[in-house]
Image (tube, rainbow, N blue to C red; front, side, top):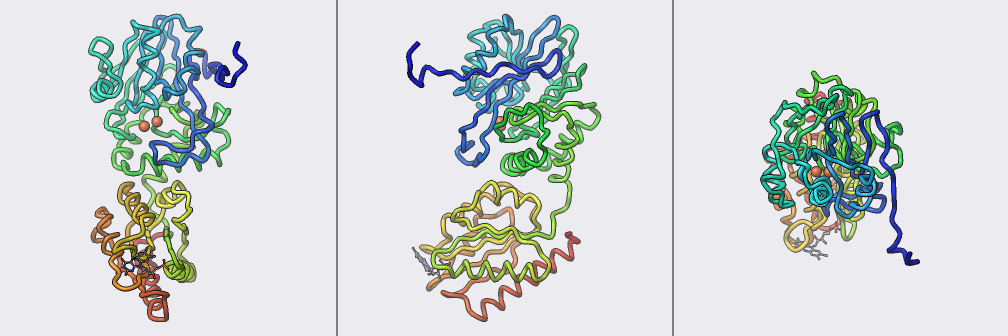
Length: 403
Ligand SMILES: Cc1cc2nc3c(=O)[nH]c(=O)nc-3n(C[C@H](O)[C@H](O)[C@H](O)COP(=O)(O)O)c2cc1C
Ligand SMILES: [Fe+2]
Ligand SMILES: [Fe+2]
């Protein structure tokens, strides 16, 4: 054996969940960014599951290809695989399917109708390798029955969940997942998991609240004892994560403001600090983020519950500072429950940032409160305007009954 780090190979064995189901997959301790966008302070995992029936053996999802070796080591003792179920076509779950198929050339990939087209586009699966399963269709593995439940838009149009009837396990893929690297198989450290799952919801699921509502209702009739997602630990008390999703999706926003700002010479910072205290003095909570260094994950998490979003930016080259524009684009894309938004900020000679910020957030059209701008360092008139904005936000929250 070559005495060099490249010869080292991490090997984590499959872990038993029930008599018929094993966890497989990989923990990605070092990953710090997902989709080149989402900060992962605690890493992530890619969970696959082996379901062993008396007649058929099935692998549910695979792993991000750079973790293929770990999955293949776990599959070393599995002589035959009849099916690979693809709950979701994104490559962190489907990317290793072609390599698993090389080992099991007779295995058939199962997924939703839309998933079939996507896997042809993403990993080049051919007609003979794939079989579409319909919503509600079942597959017998001998002593076990899998039911396919279409759960679209968590978070792509093709996503589905797979339900193992006899053991009441829901394999939900990204739905209910959390980006968390841990050796805990189960979600027992609930405070940590809540944070990771909320971050995941905010960044991945929040834009799809309507379909999620439908999917949560769709799952109501099923007796679910375990939720086995494809990221993060398994829920053996699923009411914990189901309750959290119900809160994030259905509960009204809170009497809270997300205030994200950026400032070059402190004028916008002074405006933001003034507004922060004006709001707190009126009994409104503030989640405060300096977008120069803020954890964008925490910023998006704060948007899950807030009633109002305020973004502060100086005018830079006729428009917003790029960091503030980034915050605006995120807020517009993630479609939080937030009811009102406002832009504040300082300028040197002409301004223009507020209008451009509002243009970046068409989802908030008609819900903008009057912007507050100051020329240079803010003075008494500007503070009066910020008091006016604080009054307006407070009134809006009271009128909407936000608590
Ligand atoms: C790189 C740069 C570009 C700027 N571009 C503009 C501009 O296009 N229009 C404007 O009115 N002010 C412009 N300014 C002036 C700032 O908006 C002004 O100094 C403001 O008070 C800064 O607010 P801050 O202290 O929160 O950074 C610019 C300043 C800098 C440093
Ligand atoms: Fe995904
Ligand atoms: Fe995923």
